Length: 86
Image (cartoon, rainbow, N blue to C red):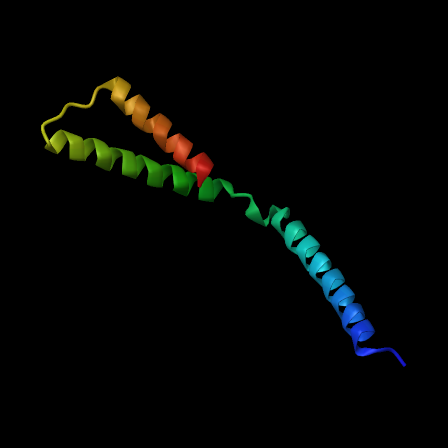
């Protein structure tokens, strides 16, 4: 008859295998196409970012600051970086 230490060791080995299998499944689920955005979702994100940009420009202009084309391009560029990070 196996000792309790042997049973605990076998149980831990089974638990370890289950955990490894669970991690593999979680990883595979992260690779599926469900994370790709549709064209509609991309368009909605673009429109949202354009709205944020226009609000930033409007806020600056209400403070009496003029926003040049270069500043507008910098805002666009910063917002594009935000989309790649998030």
